[in-house]
Image 1 (tube, rainbow, N blue to C red):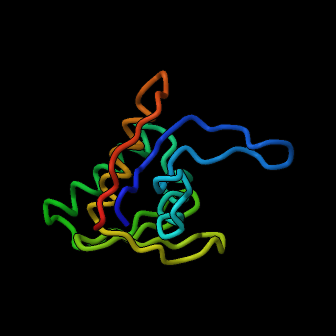
Image 2: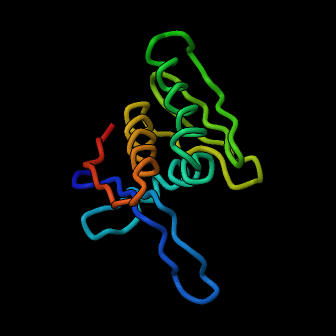
Image 3: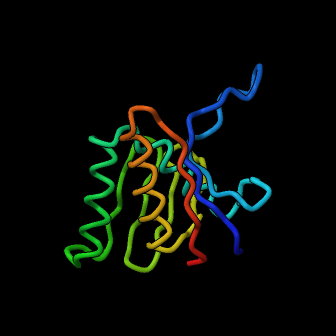
Length: 134
C-alpha cells in the first residue's frame, strides 16, 4: 500500500441528511479512504477532542508504552477502547461500532501526533503526511 497519506482537515458538510465527514483519514492516491484504517480513524476522531485534554492523555499513553512503563494500555475513551502495545494497536467500540482494525504502534503514534498537532492549530490548517506501511 504505497502512496498512502494521513490527512487531517476541517470537517466538511456532506450534504442534506449526510452530516459531516471526519477530520482524520488515511487515503490512497485517488483520495479514497482506505478501509483497513477506518476503525483507527473513527476511534481517534471520536475520542480525542482537544490537544490539551484528551490529546495530551493519548500522547502520554504513547510515551508510557515507548518508555517501557507499560506493556499494554487499554485507553478508554468516549466511544472506543484503544488497546495499545509496542507492536500493535487495536480498537473496540463501546457501543457496538466494531472491533479490530489493528495497526502498527508506529502508525497509531503518527496518527495521534498529527491529529493533536492539527487540533492545536487555532486555524485548523490541513495537514498531510506520508503513511508508513507498518
